[in-house]
Image (cartoon, rainbow, N blue to C red; front, side, top):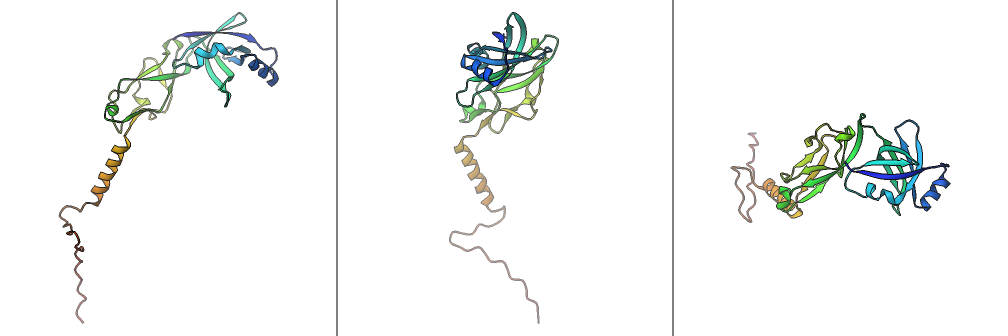
Amino acid sequence: MKTIEIIGYKRANLGKVDAKRAREEGNVPCVLYGGGEQVHFVAPMILFRELVYTNDAHFVHLNIEGEVHKAILQEVQFHPVSEIILHADFLQISEDRKIKMDIPIRTQGQAAGVSKGGTLVRKKASLKVYGFPKDMPEHIDVDVTELDFHHAIKVMDMKMPNLEFLDPKRASIAVVEVPRAAKMAEEEAATAAAAAPAEGEAKPAEGEAPAAEPKKDAGKK
């Protein structure tokens, strides 16, 4: 897995005013935890481009005033309007300790249902996995070639050496949606089948009223 280098500088003050000033200067307030004491620092926002705006997972080489840490980006917060990075949390990792990571998904191949006019829909953009850092992939390939209508690839279908998938096993990863025209045709066929007379039952001729049921004997007085 590729490693991104980020250079940081320890924060002297931890208040909201100081954090706001850091953002105005083009920096991101950050926290590193997992190695004992938390380390509060700021890092240039421009260095997050390859780490955040990407379709792959990455390790992070953190250099905080000469102190080097291997880490992963655990959480990032964005401004709801401007979408600038407001805060980032990093988790320090070591090769002998298992970690949890969200690994992006990439689909491979053309689904059988798509060649029939369907649409491939990804239900998940990433999968949460658990394992040692050395076994973590940059992305997870999902082969959708055999995926047809009314079928889905689920988390339980995924197998990768030395990794455990933590999402619900029955959660769908990708499905092929039936085209609206085909769906309407199926519904019309089902409606017509439900309205058809049962086997052995005579269908009344056009304009002819259905035969009346025979009256039961009233009985003799």
